[in-house]
Image 1 (cartoon, rainbow, N blue to C red):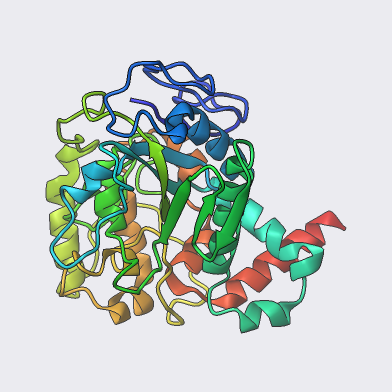
Image 2: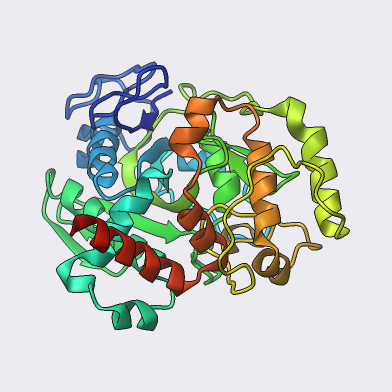
Amino acid sequence: MTSYYLSKNTTKLPYNASTKPLIKNRRRSSSLLPPSSSSSSSSSSPNSQISWLKVTELLAQRLYTLGFDLVKAFPAQRYNAKVPIGISSLPTFGRNNTLAVVVANTKHFWEIFLAHLASESRKSCGEIDLDPNPIDTYTKSKIPQSVIEILTKFSKVYSNRTKASISSGIDYDIRYSFDKDKSNFVALQLLAHEARLAYYNRLCGLNVHEVAGPWIGLRAVVTFDLDGPESLEFPQHELPNPYSEGDLMLKTELSMILNNIPMVTSRLPSPTLSHPTIASDDSNNSPNSDAEKPERNPLITSSDIRHEWYKWVKLRDLAGGFMTDKQRERYRYSEEQLEYHYTHNKAVLKLALSKRKYEKL
């Protein structure tokens, strides 16, 4: 199945050393035109002449420059077949295999996001204070821009909030991890699992990537009025747990957190704490994010995350116990990224920006 993993200066990991995506197990040509034979019921439509591989590849390349370095295409029907009752399905546009693309990021996102905040249009600390969630704002701005930019390579686009269509009949729909509206809400952790991007470990409430481990953030899913991967091409077996041998330790550790028992995994690295009690949840991949509310452990409250977030970092470290030292160095969030991820404290952003401004002097 086609996967896009984008990172620089990588050798042993399944990434290309350049910014171009590495296509694994490609079954179709990357040309603009797909093979003439197609099992989709919409194969006679003009849109069937647009390759989902090409759309996904171009989108992945563009999003990488904006910090979103994990992109995976999958048939929307795969998620719709598993979506819990009460949560809306992804649109299929009347197709049998509809292209959907999950967008996520690794540690790669942080420096690009900070550079955006430090740019001329965002340099005011007052703007940061007025923005309830700068990462959400950035995400909601950059992903639609990228989608439209890519679709304009095929036809003329006009946009209407998170939905748009183009003159040849292509529509798209974007749903974010922070969407709370019932009509737009998506169980993004389940979706990432069904898309085979990252295993959803329900013991700890984290998606765990085979290379980046639990150090990923799930941001959005984009669904296109285009034929996507065919069901027969998409693996039907369950996505394997990359660290099943750690499940017992995770279960024990989570039990200790919930029962307010001191942590026993002293061998795990501890983050630097500068504001451990100022908190609100990030929409990133964490045990209590909005993206996981329908499936989260009811014993875990927002207060648990806010006031003792460093314990959840240790749980996250444990979930990535299979990672090599080089992988942890490359993908584990920096201390400032960790703190902002769990506390959402604007002072962390301001300090990070000031530090980088001083380093440039």
